[in-house]
Image (cartoon, rainbow, N blue to C red):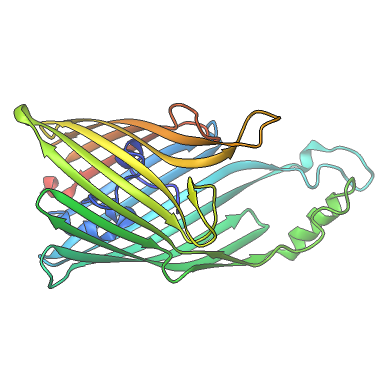
Length: 333
């Protein structure tokens, strides 16, 4: 649930919380659902780690009335066809490749979003209710629940946004298949100290906050420039460039150059981190970051977007190609 959705957002380094205004707002800031005119749907696919992992997303949103809207989204991040070699060696010590089986591991996130305008002019809010499902083959599975809260405020050409994720703290409770776990224990003959105890059965996701501001400037001949800045915050010590025991922060900046609301070029940089120096004899940290670029096309209610993330390979993650599609469903009426 931390990766993000929509190729447009990836191209802008995920600096979306203040100006998101379509079906994808269910993820970035549910408040933005109030900006859709009727109903919209979105799809996204991305490959991670040299196509080992698949990341997919589908969403739908609908305007209820002039003051409210709702949305539903589903995310899956999974690795399929993993070799299970725990039974590779039979009871007599022989290698038998027929004993190899396949399994998948996947995380699912289902989010229901609701947004409503407040009596205060230009002030609006949105909430998410999330169900998290995690599966590791036949070995283990878990259920989790959590909530998000978002707000947006518009004044003239400026847009401000706040998104607090997992505001009540999100809990995942695991159910471990002890029969399958015993097979893993028995397979560790070379190093009996590994995998001898059952893992913890509870995971806790602490709250995180995003504060954003954006401004769009329209030029002559149908050209425009949208600039957005995010400040991503976690309430613990991390490798962010500003970090303390209480709060850690890192910025993200995104740009979108548009022509006649038809074609878009995007760029962004974010994920600034303090990383250990590559020099063996150096104790100093170096600052790493993640640059992204993207393209987008919009025509008669259909938007097709592409993003290339981590372009400069500044961080440890491998670059990824992201494709997404967004459709204003009212065009089919």
